[in-house]
Every structure is written in C-alpha cells, then in structure tokens.
Length: 283
Image (tube, rainbow, N blue to C red; front, side, top):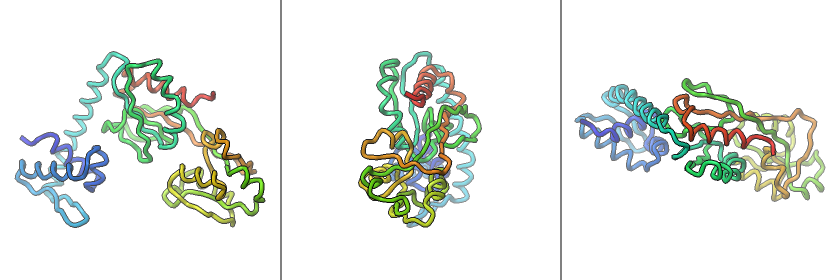
C-alpha cells in the first residue's frame, strides 16, 4: 500500500507541472514534493517522473498513475468538506482568499468586528493574485473580481468599487494635464479593465513606470512621479493623494463572493460570508 501523502504530492506535481508550483499549492518546499514522489516510486516500483536539469516530465507510467490517483484526491477533498459541513458550532478555522491589496485595505481593518461577534472563529486571510481552488480546499471562501464559472460553486455579487486617477497634491498643482506622466501595470495586467480604461486616457503621453504591483503604483504616485489609476478605497482616504477628475466614463469592478456549495451552510463559513458582505457596504 502506498502512502496517501506520497500520492497527494505526486498528484499535485502532475497537475501543476513543476516541483515549485506543486510546492506552492501544497504549502511545502519543493524538496518535500521531490521526496514524496521518490517514495511513491519506491513503493510502486515504477519510474513516474523523468528528472532533468530544469524540467520534470511524467513518464507513461506516471501519467497512468496520475489518472488513477486524481479521483482519489477529489474524493479526499469531498470528505474534508463533508466533515467540515457536519460541524454545528460557529467556531473553527475559516480561510479567505482575496486580492492582496483588497485583503489588507478593506478586509483586515474590519476583522475586529468579526472577532467581537464570533470569537470562536479563527481566520486565515490569504492575499493572492491567483485564483485559489475551492474544490481542493485551498480556501473556504474567496473574493474575486471576475465571476467564476467553475462547477460546484455558490457565487454572489456583493458590491463594487470604482477607479479614478490619483497623484500627489503638489504634482497635480504644478503639472498641467497635457504634461502628466503616468504609472500603470505591466503586460501581466494589460487586459484588466482598469488598465484598459487608463490606456484610453493616456493617449500619447509618457508612461514613466510599469509594474505588476498595486502598492508600488501607490507609493510612486505619492512620491510625485506621476498619476495612477487607483481604486477609490485606496486613493480617497490617503491624504498624500488627490483625485484628478477626467471626462472619460468611470470604471468599476464588481466583487464576487464565492464558496463551495458543500460548505455554504456551515455556520462558521456563513458567519464569515455575512462579514464579507458587510465589508463592502458603504460606511
């Protein structure tokens, strides 16, 4: 009999394609994934992976084992969700996945309210750009800026937030609009609605900084480097930033609350869902 943990690590490697990606998904280091896969090869007597300098490729035996083992992983996750759903009290750990800056700027400042209401709930707040898999229990609840299409999920739109142009007050005072320099996302976010909106405003003017990180854009705008398209929840409350009004139609992003249907009625999960809904209400 092979060790389930060895199988689980191998399935993650087969799904993610690399040791480092599998390690990130599992929350371990890549050496642990490699060790577990090697142990599975020993217990099965099969060579499952071709190891080369920079790539890891499944052998034909590895592909067959991965096909057999994948439903085992799904069944294990379903078992975990069923066990969590059977818990009656409003307590235990609930994990939330949300965009990094939204997690730190909107959710985290309001967590004390949830703590007062439900002291038995322990939260794990994961700020990440990638989409956590709710079916694989990478998170119990997620906030997303695009409506998900995966099967088995309960999805609800719980609010939206707008974007405007922001710059340092001194920069906006001394710089005429035709001479504005801009701060934007790099190619990794070029298709995001706010970046498309910003591109219609920039025209032929200069982009002095491109980055994949929103906090970097905020810091650069505060310093007077240029102006950036920022969400209102960041820009409006910052005394070091000032909104610059443009004639273009405003841009808004919807916020979607997502939970696996198996967990929707769990008391602790429902309490966290209600808290997140209230986080989006105007105050």
